[in-house]
Amino acid sequence: MTVSGLPPYDDTNIFARILRGEIPAKRVYEDEWALAFHDIAPQAPNHVLVIPKGKYCSFADFSAAASDAEIAGFIRAVGNVARELGLEEPGYRLLANMGNHGGQEVPHLHVHLFGGRFLGRMISAG
Figure (cartoon, rainbow, N blue to C red):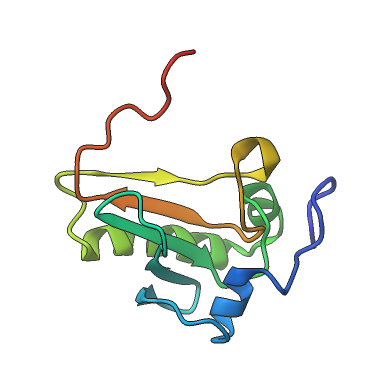
């Protein structure tokens, strides 16, 4: 199921191909609900992508169509990755881009987890 107004899920996107093992990734965490791997163009000392294993384009799609177990499993996976990377203290940032205006480049729901240095303000006024 895809939320009205969103394009259908594209099985050829790079994250779908990583999930199928067609493209290698430096994996840091995996369970039945999610996969986490290092970004190929890191923007912080720790820059990991966490993706659900289901076919979801966005949070709207995920929240409408995923099972309660998938949602809980994905959220727990994000927390597990942050803990395993030792980022709870001193802190980290989560970022999820949705759609064109949000800057989403891959049409598979994903969360960027940044850490390892002071990250500053998220959005400047202007």
